[in-house]
Amino acid sequence: MKIRFAIILFAATTFFTSHLIAEDQALGVLDEKVSKLTAQAEDLQFRYQQLQKALEKIQADLTQLRQAVATAGGTSPAELKMLEDRIAAVDAARQKDRQAIIEQLAKELSGTGKSPAIGDGKEHIVAKGETLSSIAKTYGITVADLKKANNLTGTDIKVGQKLSLPK
Image (cartoon, rainbow, N blue to C red; front, side, top):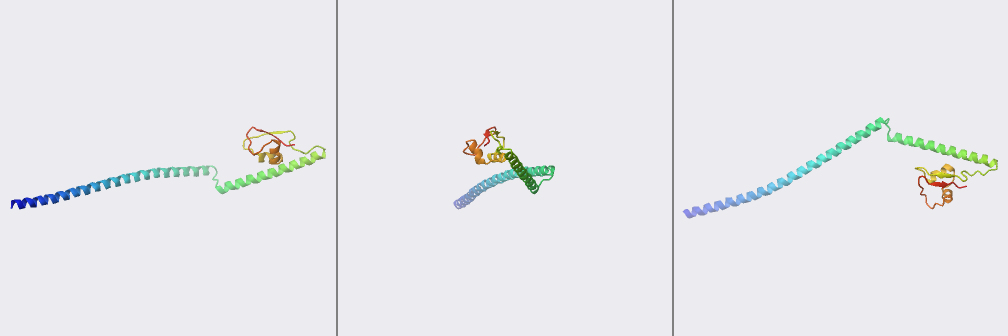
């Protein structure tokens, strides 16, 4: 009987030991999964905090922009466009008046026997923001004539460059 009891005891011990080992392994797997999930949760929380800070910065920038617009008289994009259109209209009227003055001057000069050419023997020094087109408009000449008078093959000019005006 003692042998039978020893065999049953051994079988029960083996059974429980294998179950305990299996449970330990399962707990180890669960612990590993919990650790991974915890790390992922911490990473998500960190990213959320970064996004929250970025959102707060964007909101602060937006508030600053609104304050700047309000301080500047509440100028809206539509109002800015209207102002740009008014500036363009005034500039066009100025160019038209300038052209009328040049034409009147040419008529008066032709009546005195002088050539009406504008800028005879004169030079123009290029200022910041000027282009061949704007310079040609200023003197009532074509870009092609201006390029020809200065032996230019392209439209590149530099600030401070002296350009001869065509005769």
